[in-house]
Image (cartoon, rainbow, N blue to C red):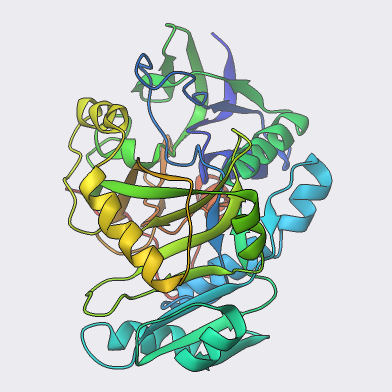
Length: 388
């Protein structure tokens, strides 16, 4: 049985960077990372929402700790791109807007306070947003706009870059998923057993049900629907200067997000929108598989697309379609990053916003796994895990 200093289970937005950081310190590392499903309907392994082409990235957030994590991760994109050859960051600008009264007023107040300390972030009212960016925000909205250093990042490219650099630093990559963990021995899908001094469990939404941690973490996993609008080349060119957008539609009690035109692996341009809150819970691996095979909820997608058209006057589309996504929320609102014992560390809990700052969470995971303390890293939260 091959043995390592560390096994990282999960090769996504947190696990792959964690493995890279550990390997780059000279530790022997095994990264257990299931591949992207080639055929959703026949795939029997774990699904991952990070198998996607675009996620919003920005410095401004309603919470200072999330803003700090994002700023640190964004600052490292260029180095990761240079060393891996992957294009991760697309600087299209980022806009975050909300109402100044009502149930989301505190949320708006939070991101306005953070924006005041972000270099280059400016505050715009609805008229200014319409004039500068062509976006029709709800009346009474106020927006922070990062013209530079915000936009979108490619989670597939980030995952590939982190995994490749981990291997370059000496890590061993196992392209399958973990079936079980017995203390510090991990059994892979094909029956292979590998051992380590320490195991980091970074399995995202699956951590709530895969049994790889010593107890069940307090995580709520939601089956979320996203929607795509395919654009013609002409419409894509018309919207080429569009930033990534987070906003609260009029009368809604939560925010939505929308990506600018992005060319997906099929060669076509798509706008993507998401932000559903009233969605079913995912309680098991069977639930997760059924949800991703379902293709999403068409009725929810229609509601999202109606808001897309409201904020983008004159939008024309070739076709529209729903898509499935899984979002995991922790009990604290922050990732769980904690060395639980001499044998295992937990690294999970993306809270719907971790793709952009996964490199920072992975760095903190590597610190925790090697016995370091996180209370000197500048965060107000302590990243302690909560158990169900």
